[in-house]
Length: 273
Ligand SMILES: Nc1ncnc2c1ncn2[C@@H]1O[C@H](COP(=O)(O)OP(=O)(O)OP(=O)(O)O)[C@@H](O)[C@H]1O
Image (cartoon, rainbow, N blue to C red):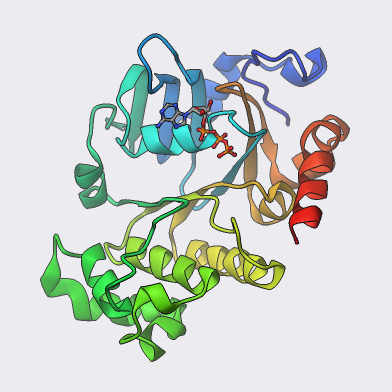
């Protein structure tokens, strides 16, 4: 079933927008994480997110795609308490986290990997992972063992400075650090950005493995096609409103989504590669 939740652009056809916000709200019932009518922005009077609705169910990988500047990263930042929420609500397991700050969210089981500057380059891999669990340092050894089972490279090269690593390896350090607190939700902002096609694939495979280990994932991605291939469900975010949500495979085969987003984005990624 396709569930449009309102669009400000008018780019998507009325048929795709037929389902109502009420229907989206019904589907979101009992979700692990949900945002209702989320409004947020940076500059006074300018809302980047405009009554955006979103949910993540337990066990899901949800991808967020859309054009540049649509507000994808802003959505993650507002879910993670990095920018103030101006309107609407965010709940985690039914409890409000609307005003919660990032450090509180980390203790509640939410991890976040920003798109850039996501490692401490002068610290070793092991020290980077220690930073990920500085709130519970006594759990370091246990969590290090668990995280490096998913990312063996982090154990093998634990004494290497993060600044000496390739982009793909740094991404693994950043993900590993976010996993140190054993989150139930992981927010990933463009994990494949700037990586070679081989490393992009590696990142998506890792995401699947992380998900299989019991972590629900929200992933913002420019590599929309690849993202939708591994996602259970996707949102097409447009001008701060989640215009459309459906299963990853339905979005991949939706002619309008292909025309509006996958065609151009695929072309851009090919050009990059
Ligand atoms: N720190 C900031 N201060 C002011 N405006 C910002 C800031 N960060 C982002 N914006 C603006 O918010 C809008 C949405 O940006 P955002 O990064 O969320 O988009 P996006 O969908 O993730 O796009 P991209 O794919 O280009 O990263 C853009 O117009 C951007 O210029």
